[in-house]
Image (cartoon, rainbow, N blue to C red):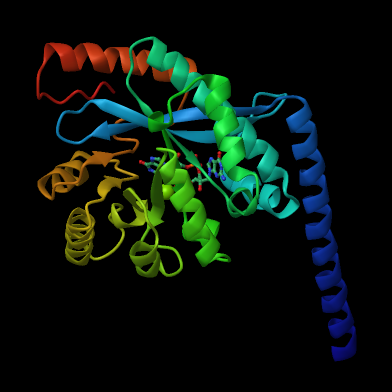
Length: 291
Ligand code: C2E
Ligand code: MG
Ligand code: MG
Ligand code: MG
């Protein structure tokens, strides 16, 4: 009897592995088709100055919109895209499009910085700098409008070369931010070693899941740490007014989050920009929130 069970559980185990492998192959195939069909789009989430309420930038976030109009989140396909190397192609698309659309907005009189997330694979690409240059040149966008977001995942394998790459990127006038700060592997070590411009506090520290007092202490400390290191500090995942008020009281520079807006397709983002500009023009120092 027990032998049977053992065999069964082995079989189940085997099937699970092959199912997982199969799903991976299927997803990879779908991603390749999606690339051919141009199904990757860039959404934009505003970055807002905490004191003025003005939109000062945006983060480019990739979305896969399939033939049935379903929006597939990056969490679902980025891991496989990284494993298969497809992230390089997807990343190129995001970078190029983000530069083009930021240039178009600059031409309409909006002085906005765009930030683009970089994966480890892109960071390991010997031609990364050339690709960035190409994206800027094609769009005719000044480098001061571009910011690159890296995480511990981006740099984990190659600390020394990463530092060199970051230095090169910054030499071109492009800013670098350390994303998801506080959650990844060895965050403080990176903060010490990486020549970055901006610190992005991860949303887990904003979210009220833990001990509220401890959370406040951590936020206070991280913001003050960033300031002492002359870094711009931005909070992500702000969903409520109390969170915003607290961040403001601590001198946090900018925020992103559903409280102000979700990531939006370009046309909706431009509409939001337009409202925000008008409100900021008519009400100095007021809360320019539009949603
Ligand atoms: P991230 O770079 O840390 O981006 C922030 C994520 O938080 C986004 O998820 C955003 O939609 C979400 N978010 C923003 N405000 C709130 C809020 O108030 N509450 C909550 N709960 N979430 C909020 P998204 O767009 O699903 O992206 C997930 C991750 O996928 C990103 O995390 C980034 O690591 C990766 N990713 C997205 N686009 C790209 C890309 O073009 N290239 C690469 N390599 N990675 C990307
Ligand atoms: Mg990011
Ligand atoms: Mg983040
Ligand atoms: Mg993240």
